[in-house]
Image 1 (cartoon, rainbow, N blue to C red):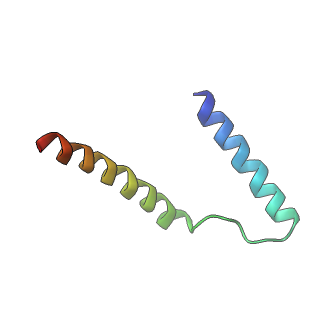
Image 2 (cartoon, rainbow, N blue to C red):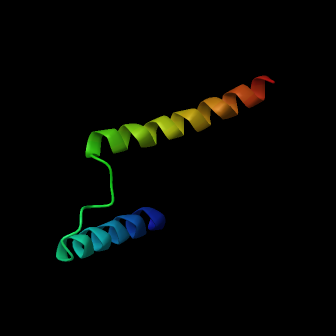
Length: 54
């Protein structure tokens, strides 16, 4: 739980800093970013599953 809170706080700090510097946010669009993360997670899960079959 501590890691989740620290990552959210770090993200907020980076977002505020980038807005003050008038830079584009260093993140993909929301839906594609979330789907990319889900895809990476599922790929790792499937890789572990395949490794147990071999």
